[in-house]
Length: 95
Image 1 (cartoon, helix red, strand yellow):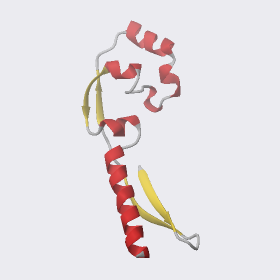
Image 2 (tube, rainbow, N blue to C red; image 1 turned 45 degrees about the vertical axis):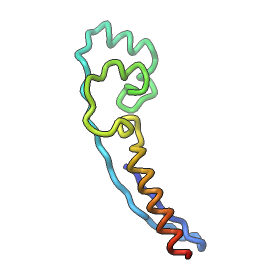
Image 3 (tube, helix red, strand yellow; image 1 turned 90 degrees about the horizontal axis):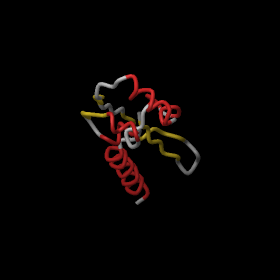
């Protein structure tokens, strides 16, 4: 999930908004040799879900339903819209 907070001039923290975004990823059928080779590459060892869609793991993905950036870890479009809203709201408050 993503949460954006605002810090007021007197150091009070308030939630602007938060959301959760999901995506579905379909993998190709993998043989034991494919899996062993991927493990040997070292890539899955530091990944949530044991694959990186932006790396070697992306070669095993046959379909994505949802936002590619959500699969990578941060839904960029939705997050940037939320940040812009938070900044615009703050500018309006101080005008």
